Image (tube, rainbow, N blue to C red; front, side, top):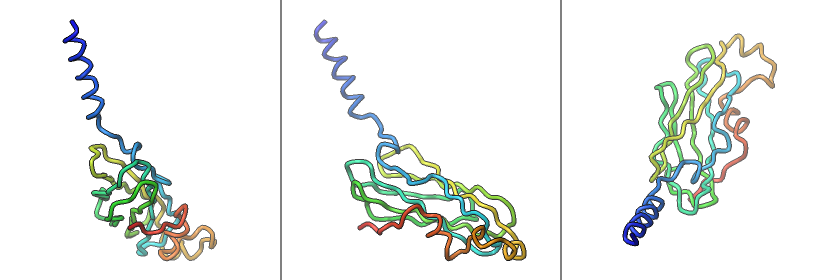
Amino acid sequence: MKKILLSAAVIALSAAAFAQKKVDDIAKFTSETINLGKIKQGVPTKGVFTVTNVGSQALIIEQANPTCGCTISDYTKEPIAAGKTGVINATYNAANVGHFDKHLTVKFAGIDEMKSITLTGDVVSADEFDKLKPEAKTSAAAAAPAKAVKKVKKTK
């Protein structure tokens, strides 16, 4: 009987030790959705997602892949130390007029779970864009700083 109890305890401890971490245990996004607002057709516009390492070990972004060819991404390639931040830049090409919701799937090293982040907004024609009030406009130069929650220092 003692052997059975000991075996069960060892199995339970082993399972707990090898339990897979979840994304929320190691990484926290300032925002999982960035609304670019109204953007001018034909003017690529960037959103900057900030991710903080809330774990105790270095965080590595393995991939940040857009789900379509109309969005490109770049991200912090070097390990992000515990408590520090990294960024994922997502640039939407704004070729077609209308509303958009573009998703990126983010993969962190050592975690099987993927995280989905979203870039959203409305592309308007150049004529419509010129008629908008200044506060309703988003330009390619101003989109990232205006929509980022805080300025991010590049981590080493």
